[in-house]
Amino acid sequence: MYEYISGTVADLAPTYAVIDAGGVGYYMNISLQTFSAIEHECAARLYVHFIVREDAQALYGFATPLERELFRHLISVSGVGGNTARMILSTYTVDELRSIIATENAVLLKNVKGLGLKTAQKIIVELSGKMVDAVRGKATVPAAADGGSYDEALAALVMLGFQKSASEKVLKAVVKESPSISVEEAVRQALRRL
Image (cartoon, rainbow, N blue to C red):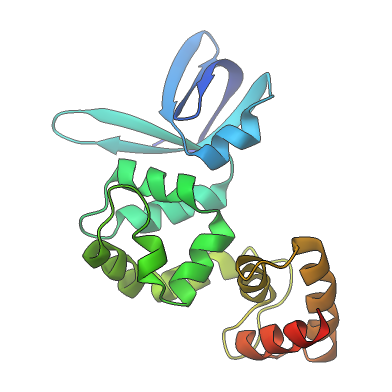
């Protein structure tokens, strides 16, 4: 129904934003990622997901279409509602979440407040293919032939504690030498060079 809402940031908190679009204030639930992106802005464009339940209607706003797409994937999992999906996106960045799902790390995912181990495992099972496909179309570096990608390898290195800038430099060299390298091999080679 809504694609995005642009306007003046009338009110902002870590969990919600009110965007004044032509004299109408739209209250949107947001993640900490979106809050960080628009925290110092006077005007903003938030990509919207509208949820209608029998007892309520809610708008969720996202700083990027990618974050909204991941939110939609999360709420497609049985037992994961809008607030739980927002909490997941507030706890982990897009790259961290993709890495958690790619490595099937349900224990790390269950650290999200209100998320149990069974639900975390269900999210991983149901989204393991969708998350990679959803983000692959937005990647700036070509994906490897076997389904791996530069972005996944970078996320893994950052989660291992390496600085993002140093990891990017090394990974670009690795991918340039072997464009169809697997994620695992790219990480291994980068670890040798870091």
